[in-house]
Length: 202
Image (cartoon, rainbow, N blue to C red; front, side):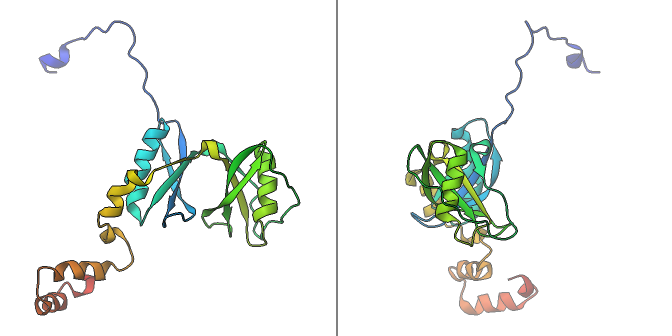
């Protein structure tokens, strides 16, 4: 062993423990301004600031994105999941806090923001959301207190609105690549290039 590795360091007391990323966050993205938030995935982060930053860097660049909404996983409350559409209800009322409602059209599909209800607790919010949004085409209802939902501002997403991210999208990949080649090559050169050994991948 080298002399440096032989050195024994003496620290006063125990080293501090690590800070695990123990908060699990659900992430939703908006494809259009003022459009509904659509479930995108999950991430782990120690606080909301870092969670929003991670969401912007990952989910904000994966697809067209004009806004991001997140909440801690444990903040949600779900109705039962049905193979067939779940039944509606007759719960009503507008007392209590505001809850954001997400609806899943069919089992296995993503949850999409449907609207809001007001309720004093999660169970009542689910019941009122079923009455309002379970229209025979919903297999699950999810509610989250609005106070537990965090969203980006338009200014925070400016970099992704202005930067051309089309090359990362599955749709029109070849068309986008060809358009970029056309900016500095003649059409005849472009056609000749595409007809060579790269034709199957271009």
